[in-house]
Image (cartoon, rainbow, N blue to C red; front, side, top):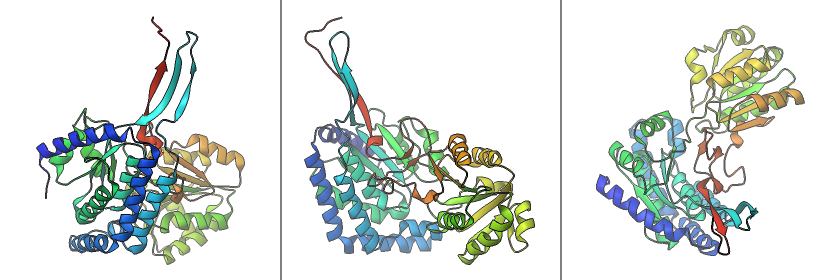
Length: 415
């Protein structure tokens, strides 16, 4: 049932009250809540899969793409992975109270800068029910209350997962809140200044634009991933083929999958002859620029200007031949989304120039872009991958859900 605007505000007030209690919990209490949530997930697999089956059936009837259906789908293995990630987060150090820096000032005051929770974090996300639990676990571990607003395509899955987490955690009412409804409810959430401290949207450009139009609450955008793999002139072609195939095909419907392949002109004749058939055999639709066509022959689609800016989230890859590392960096700078970019090279100097020249949250040398993930980075999970630069960049984990305060102690000091 849709939540009214008035109730959105009241639920945010309730979350704010809960956040003040959560901020004071010690690690043992938070970890116990997370382990209880993980145990409940394991125990309630049939209920979770039943709810997810309803969403999957509705999604197929609505004509959702294969990529979106893959994001939406839960099975026993995926639920077990979600529960395991909750336990992984519980095992991580508690960021709250961590001393960032400090010391004694010349006037004798003792000063410490320590991490503290943000307060109430709103997470808005599309068609990925695992985010319900990942975001909840990260928020609770970092001492925050969370307000979840998933998409209608996953409403049954999200509702049962949030209910299981809230019931099992034993934490104050309002610690875990899930909203439903449309654009009006989203706008209400995004304008609850003083109640909501941060909103993190996890979805495509449409969601980002919807929030940009209305939000007055601070927002960290975890948006699109138009990612590139650049194969340099000196690249080991066996390595390059493995990386390109993995970056495109291992899970094409996610934001860290490669969408464009750039190949140095010196490597292109040999590399395109081997990598394009390998990708085609795996079902990838290839869209080539003129120079790539000249080397690869017929049978491939022509790339358009629009292709360089498209996040396909599907088995489609644009391919372009470039004359230099600098041209590759320039192309990425013009068309990339600041998410994840990779170079395959045997030239240390070229790798260094790529690292310095590419402006993205994650820059890889001789590795697939598919590693941009909080779990892979040792963060337990993530709420999303920030493509902006202020406060948080890349995977958003525990520390990124904290701010800091200065604790100052004196002995009757006056100024």
